[in-house]
Length: 196
Image (cartoon, rainbow, N blue to C red; front, side, top):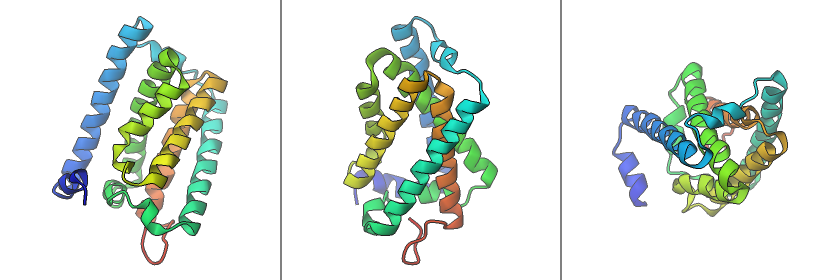
């Protein structure tokens, strides 16, 4: 068991959720400071959000495609390839649907503002995608999960490159996390009697 898994195992579910919210708040603060330094304004990334239903719909369709791909991978690949140390299970298993939605929204906004809105806008898709994958360092000991995260990051970066609208990637990220959170809660992706 790696060091991070041991630390997380020692946290209560309440402490784990609190740490999640604190880490996302820190990420958003980093995004605001980086935006000021790199883009010239504290809230510049928020100007990259264009509120349209078509952006939300596109984000939803992308999320459905990603979730289907992950479901297929779970069905055909070894179960151990998806073991994140039980972190996602602990985050989502006992949450209400509303709380899953709140977690998913907070994560989607903070991560996409930082990685697409600030880093990709100022340093490009490769830097943003690799840094996005690296913040999910708990997957470093699981090559498939890490590769999947890198692929997802480049997909979101490419969608942002094509649309120029942060709302599309925020929506996609939100729906991916919310659907997968509900899948964990309700055991939709159960394999061999165990939830991924």
